[in-house]
Amino acid sequence: MEFQKVLQSDESIVVYAKIAVNQGRSPGLEKDAFYDAIVKRADELRADGESQQQAFSKVITEDETGRLLYQAMKIAPGAEVKPAPQPAPPSPEAAAKLLGPAPARLHSQAVDHQRANPRLSYESAYSRMCTAPENAGLRAEINREHLAASMAAVNG
Image (cartoon, rainbow, N blue to C red; front, side, top):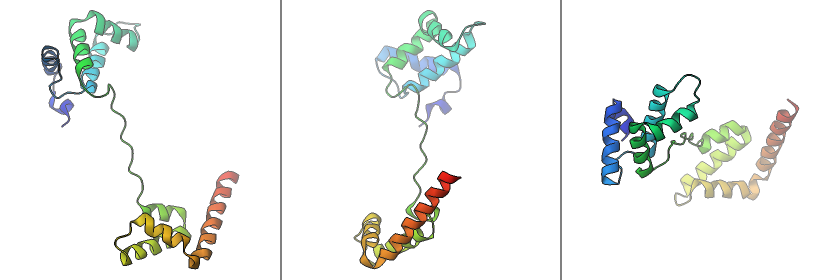
């Protein structure tokens, strides 16, 4: 559950910070919630000509609420900043279409082989189709397409 959506005001995060400091454990919030609250408070209290880093340091050392939020952040689990979500890798079908017609044919053969042999994973079926002696011509075509695409990328 994303508590940032639940926490509507600065006062509620301060309540959670007080609970965390009093209990010695975070009441369901992670470091990034407290960190974001500190950054927001530092931006609000930032003096003219003061950098973001200076304002942050001043809030966690000189401001009572900032110190409380910082103590709660140190107690809370997780990271100060959430990593950006990574896009899902393309499906084997989408990857084959991107690579060209020959890899798409090999992909189709692998899917057909996997359907005929349901105990095989897609990767095993693909490997068997790629190494099958009857697909030597297809492997050569894949190599030619790959080489042509590589040379086109290099030569512009």
